[in-house]
Image (cartoon, rainbow, N blue to C red):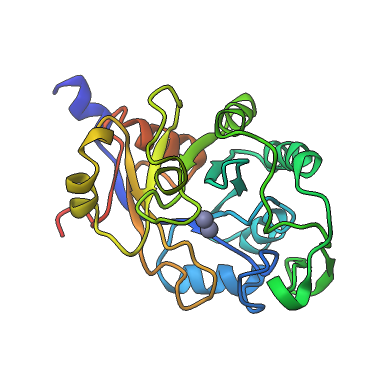
Amino acid sequence: MHAEEKRSRGLRGLRADLHVHTCLSPCATLDMTPEKIVRHAIARHLAMIAVTDHNSAENAGAVMRAAAGSDLAVIPGMEVTSAEEAHILGFFEHLAEALSLQALVYDRLQPGKNDENLFGLQVVANERDEVEGMNTRLLIGATSLSVNEIVDAIHERNGLAVASHIDRESFSLVGQLGFIPPDLPLDAVEISARMSLVEARRRFPEYRRLTFVTASDAHDLEALGSHPAYLQAAAAEFGELQLALQGRDGRSIAEEAPGA
Ligand SMILES: [Zn+2]
Ligand SMILES: [Zn+2]
């Protein structure tokens, strides 16, 4: 048996939705609460979700606790808005790393308060879906962090950096800068639910060196898990996700279930 074949044994196709907003994001619906998200994710046979609210990770711990004891792996993360108004996803192994990025992001957020009537409520909830309070920061705004600074800050915290929805005009690297800087050490680029990976590879041949992933960018329960990625991996855990994005040890990530 070849080494590669040996390493690939025991791998399974795991459904993952790596871009999920909670009720903390002003643009998400109020029923995107920790316990409901977990229940819907399990019902939709997801093995892994990443919690990626705009410029905050304050609900990530509650979603992790709501999933404790279940088979659902919850990756704490964040969707950071750069000074160029491009969205970058950060995924972390530990909540403390996500909260460390949050401290930096809060320090560099646009000053001002969230206008609940204009942007929506920013609800901090616990794992029993009880309201703990409102976040009053301007989470929908941009930070003063450049794209390069964000990717570096994610990597300094042992995280994975993924450019959000590069096929979209608004709030994407390609939409804002017109291109992905070749020296930007991204771990992957995300393609939104609006475009298939086949189409994306045709449209962005210059980014073939990068790993493409699909995700729902769910802002409501209906969208959660609607556009999963399939992780070919040994288990639903951060280390396996990292190997899959890197295409190492037989791990990979695809838009369709293996054999579909
Ligand atoms: Zn986004
Ligand atoms: Zn998003």
